[in-house]
Image (cartoon, rainbow, N blue to C red; front, side, top):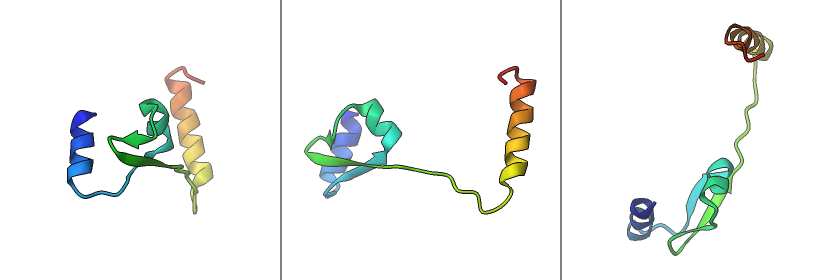
Length: 66
């Protein structure tokens, strides 16, 4: 974390960005002196969603998860 803080502050950044998931793990809204912003990432299928879900369900059954 210290390396990331140093890199961000010495690199001339005005803010830092991470995923919302990472922000929760980091438990801070600043990276050193920089504000830390979070992006919410979503998945949207343009096609093939049902095929993907079928393959995923099959894999989960094989692994004994579902």
